[in-house]
Amino acid sequence: MSTLVTAELFARPGRGDDVAQLLLDVLGESLKHEGCEQIRILRDQNDADHVTGLTQWTEPHNYTDYLAWRTEHGFTATFEAMLTRPLVIHYYDEIYRGQGIAAHVNEG
Image (cartoon, rainbow, N blue to C red):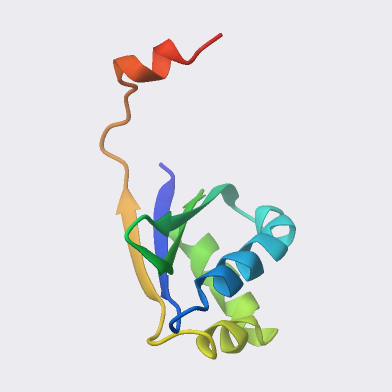
């Protein structure tokens, strides 16, 4: 079963765009990391400086290995300089996924 991971980034005031752009800039490398199945970058509609990565991995260790790799290459330190607090990371098992009626309205 896949593991879903959220990584919340709380940017310094006015730095939300920088944080989001940095995530987008490294997206290609991230998607190629072992065990990466999917990545979504989200921004809080009420706080532009709150950005979250929603990722899906084949195993929990794939994300921890990925984070260690990013840390070794100085990437985590680059992010931390733009944040008001450390990353907030949560691991989830998916219990259910379904589509609502509105999802079918938009299908061509």
